Length: 424
Image (cartoon, rainbow, N blue to C red):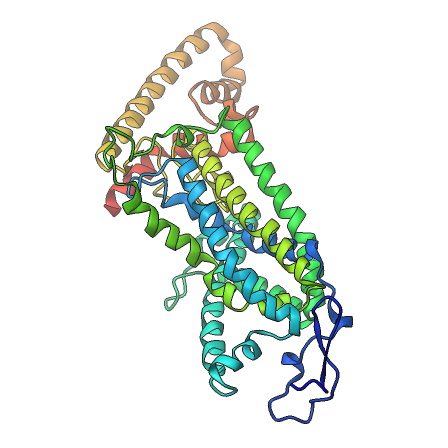
């Protein structure tokens, strides 16, 4: 561009004045955004990062750091996540500067370095990575829809899997439905994305804090994970080895948003000013990443108390189980321990035999005391015995989650043990 086709405004924004639509290198999608098309203020840039950071991968980000393989405690993991996002925020704001100043997207931003044709290489490489990330997020969204619908249609869990991909028809349908929603938003342009972000940001923050409050209330605290000491303290199993594990963990956190720090001009080109893009990103990115990572650690720690074993997947956290392999007492701080499985099953068998003897004994007593009434109304005795023997009858006044988890892990305990033992 020459000085005759561009003009610098008072705030340093350069706006295209001439008509370049006749150039073979011009396309409407990559044309510089005029000043009239820039509607993203500080709150919009912050909403962008709140919406993108408040996701399941962020929720699970600290899981590897607080595991026994690394050994950090919760606050060491949070500081690592905070520092990593501050590191990646620097190139994020610097690369966003050109997008805001000239209103250009990432492929055009690459042209001075790679040439007009060569710029297609980094643009395509970035697009391939974006396709993978979009696929992961779309699968998680479809999985959440599927788990919600199986509450009303439990037979979906029994549908046969497609041989080529290993999921059933209902899961494929939910995945495609969520994908279609994303396509409709994208088809309607950047303004629809901006509006959606401003709806999502407060909603996701509210739901995340609500989940945190629920976990704290149900577990009467945040559970054992927040009290777990660091493995790097004096006398710990990895004493003096903190830096050996810190830098790989920090690199992983930086890599979480490293690709988007390259193509951030695709969003910052719509910002009002440099202050809006810089302040919005600084407010939205590090704070949300740390907050949602903490929610993930705290809620997972609470599920160890609520359900008997930690559950890192927020989609199924209220269900109390990830499937057949989620059995209390067979987990410990060292992960799954098959040697505890026999003990778990033996305890359940003993409790089942004890319940059977107790039921028989209570039945005899009730038959003698009620006499003819028991003969005229045998269902009354049967229902009463079932309630006293630990059946669903005594669960009617409990919380629905307690009813579900107690029935699955209590009445179905022996069947679950048998399935797990056969799989190992």
